[in-house]
Image 1 (spheres, chains in turn green, brown, blue, red):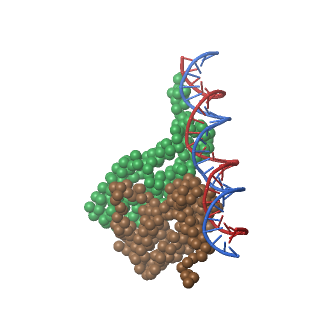
Image 2 (cartoon, rainbow over the protein chains, first blue to last red):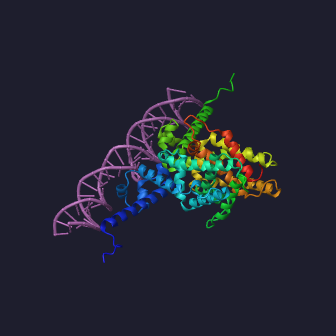
Image 3 (cartoon, rainbow over the protein chains, first blue to last red):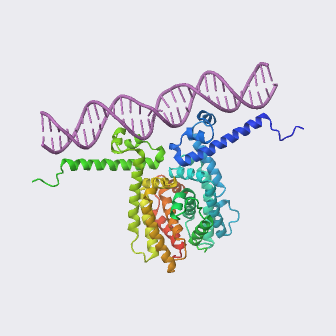
Length: 213
Length: 213
DNA sequence: AAGCAATCTGAGCAATCGGTCAAACTGTTT
DNA sequence: AAACAGTTTGACCGATTGCTCAGATTGCTT
C-alpha cells in the first residue's frame, strides 16, 4: 500500500496554487493583449481567471508586477526559438527557413502573448529592460553566425543586425496584425490563412535577400 | 481702407476653433499612442492640449468619437504617401526604393500617429472598417502593378499581396519599435539611427527578393 | 476534536473614470 | 448699452479604478 500516487495534503495544496497562478497568467495575457497595461483592469483579469477581485489580489501583489511577471514569462517562451537555438549552423538556408517557420508557428500558437510583447516593446520596453540582456546574448550570437556566413561568402553581404530584425519584423507581423492580413487576402469569416504558403513566401523573401535562391 | 487682411469677428472665431481642434487631435494622438484607447483618459488629453476637461468635452462628443476621428485623420495622411509614391510605374526598382524611403520617412516624422494606427490594426481594426475600402483600393492597384511586373518578367515571381505586406511590415517596424532597434544597434542615449543605412538595407532586401539586385 | 495555516469573501477605501450642467464670462454685432 | 452666440468654468453625477482588511471558511495535521 502507501501508493506513491496518493499525494499528501501539502502537495495537493501546492498543485492547486500552481494551477491558479497559471490561470491568472493566461487571463492576464489575454486582458493585456486586448487593453494594454493602462487599460487592463484587475476586475476583468480576475473574471477571466474565474476568481473574485480580492481573491486575485491574494495571489498577486499589484497589476504592474503581474504585468512584469507576464512579460518575463513570454520572454522565456521566446528564448527557445531564437536563431541561435538551431543546432547546425553550417547550412544558412536551413537555419533561416527553420527560424522563419518556428517563429511563424509560435505566433500562431501564442497570438496574445505575442501581442503583449510587441505592445510593450512599442511602448518603449521599460518593463523589459532588466531582462533584455538575455535577449541581447541571443541576438549577439545570431549576428556572429550571420557575419561568419558573409565572411565565408556563403551568403551575399547583409547587415547582420538589421537582417535579423527584418525577419523578426515580418514574422511578427503575421502574429500581431491578423486583421490586416485577413483584409489584404480578402478572407471570409471562416477561412483560414494558408500558412504553408506564407512560410514559403517569407522564406523565399529572406533567402533571395542573401542570395540563396 | 477696409484692408482685407483685417479679419472680421466670425473669421477669427473660426480660426481659433480650428487651432484648438488641431491641438486636441495632436494631444489625442500622443495619448492614444502611449495608453491605447482603453487606457487613454480625456482628462489627460485635455491637459496635453492645454484645456480643462469640460472644455475638451465642449469640442468633442466622446472619447470614442475622438479616437475614430484621429484614425481617419491618420488614414488620410497615409493616403497622401501612397499617391505621392506612385509616379512612373515602369521602373520597379525605382518604385520600390521610393516607396521604402517614403514610408520610412513618414514613420520618422509621425511616430505617434504611426503607433496609434498599428495598435488599432493589431486590435482588430474595428474602428477602421468603415474606411478600409479606400485602403483596399490602393493595395488593389499596387497588387496589379506588381503582378504586371511579374507577367512582363521584370521581376521574379512573388505573391503581390504578401510582397506588399512584407514591405509594410518591415518599414512599419522602424516606426513602431524604436526601442528594439536602439537596443539591437546598441545606441547610446543621444545617438541617432542611421536612416540612410536603413533605407539602403531595406531597399536591398526587397530588391533582391524580386531579383532586381 | 482541537488547532492551525491557507484561502476566500463582502464591504469599503480614496482616486479616477467619462461625461453633464447651470451659471458665469467672453467678444462681436446691433 | 443692450443683445447675443460662443465659450469657459467649477461643481457634480454614477460608475469603475487598484487595492485593503477584518472576519468567515476551508482543508489538512495533530
